[in-house]
Image (cartoon, rainbow, N blue to C red; front, side):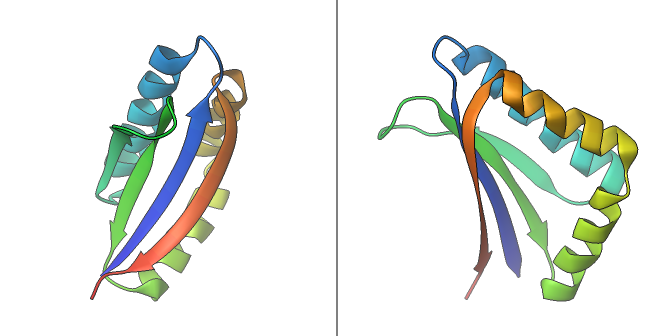
Length: 97
């Protein structure tokens, strides 16, 4: 099992907007790409961290989704919304053992 994480920090005063944004992205991926995806906000640590987690059976499935996402114009447009509510983002891929 492979988990893909994309996390970022909300701009000052934009925590609510960032939380709604990651929920929207997560729901879009689940509904339109058929990939189980959840959104979360960090409890403890730096304030305003939030992000998504998508689950894949293996690396080939993740790579296939990346190709699909890159060719999905609606998804790409949706990702542009991050600049209005997030300062940075970080991607991570974890293999569950």
